[in-house]
Image 1: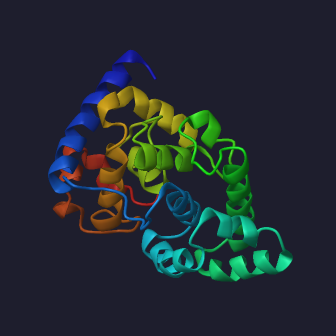
Image 2 (image 1 turned 60 degrees about the vertical axis):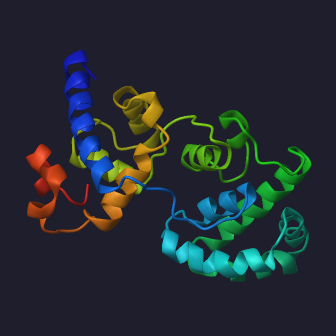
Image 3 (image 1 turned 90 degrees about the vertical axis):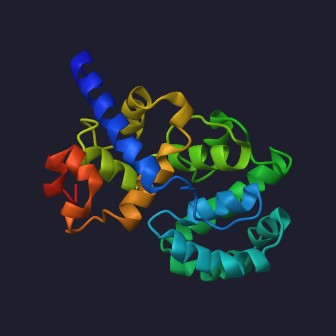
Length: 225
């Protein structure tokens, strides 16, 4: 990204975010959880699923598996694994998620003495945890901002408003970290997610009612990107 383009995008995103702050001043995570471990489970389940759908699953799941030890125990037998698969079936990719969640439970209980790690390096060692999951859990559980969480809403937003030349989450995050003031790294994702979830879906909608499109008119023609 050239210095000129960097400055253009930085100014554009600043204008967009000013509006987002007015639209969603209290935007926050919408997954339900009561402790850091449950947060990690919920975020893992949210891959290729909706927060609303995950909350329906975890409402029952967290009552059945009350402690980290319950997850560790479930992973010790094929019967326990199969039962857990049934419990999270509705989230999709349930076999892979079961494998990762139960393996992560074993690692957290053993290597991390039952505590969710507080560094990005340690988080990334957990099964099934990539930067998206790691940044969410670190910020929400520990108040540690290690980057900018990039999910499908953020990727679409970045491409619609021409804020990066890339399509993959890792490179988009690097670009955003240049465009967004560090003090906003832990907050901007929630505003973008609310925008994509409640105002600007990945399908045709009335863009004349979208204040962000007024800032960057080319976005009116881009939905699925």
